[in-house]
Length: 442
Image (cartoon, rainbow, N blue to C red; front, side):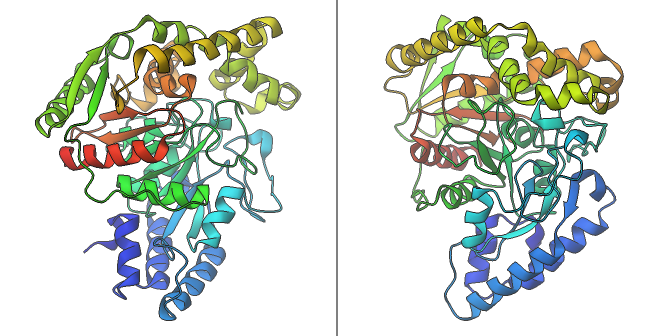
């Protein structure tokens, strides 16, 4: 078996059985990352000393039969906006060049306490403000399926490190789709928990009212285990999960506007398979979704610019112009308009739960309505960058706006994912539903 491409939970169980040694596996990942021709475009920096120390400790615990979790000894990567004590953490931005936090982010500290091995930090979009994954200021990772295509972002290196077998799993962040887009475009599972389900301390912010960390991995079980560790709770029970008898709602309308044929066909094929596996499928449309999406320009950019304005305007030449302009767009929204937009969104969120999704186990949409665009064209055509970025993040942003947990699963069609949106705070239920869907789609 190629253990570098095994799921995180498969590796954890192999360590438990004595089949796999954390030291050997960590060394294999470090060697694979170092030797990969695109390593410098994927990893902002490896942390071999830390990884080896953590692997030795995991090895000793395994020998003494006192492992701290199923994933004790499993090596993963971390997005470069998640603080790692004593290690440069720059959030993909030259504005933060040389920034060294004193201690780990809370979620990384929890993972370390449960025995997980930190391989290093992965490249990302500048300050996490794009869904395409391009970053000419630091590095743009290659799409794992086709290096000429955009990798998806902003957790670009996180997803690519897993897809290419350079990490067992990864942790990224998601403000408008930054975990789910790169997961979908690289053939992986990506989970965005409910906002507030994980501590944010030590995570470089983009827009705190939407930011949330989340895992990118090869399976729903991997995501469930990593989420539980970061949340400091027991993992949800996924045994025997099935879609038989579940009520799933296909959200019609906006998620399919201007969608390309490939993602739509892949989505329909996946929905058909879920139906054949026993799920009850309903097709619903609602104007509440359009009303929520119309508020986006008044919410995301103003908060992001409010957080970063001083640093940006002190040295705007350090930023790539398309990202700089996205931030500066927040300056055009007044304070009263920002507050009013949040008041409107709160009402829409209540209407969504009460009038639209009551009684459904999950909502289904295509994760991204387009296939990964050509990387070089995006770099040279500003209008295409803006168009593709807005369309790339449109579907994933639904969950962020409505305050929902969401997960993307591979459909079996390259770079095409299907997303399941759950109910606020019911992350564990959504993971079980997703595990059943994953089995049906296998």
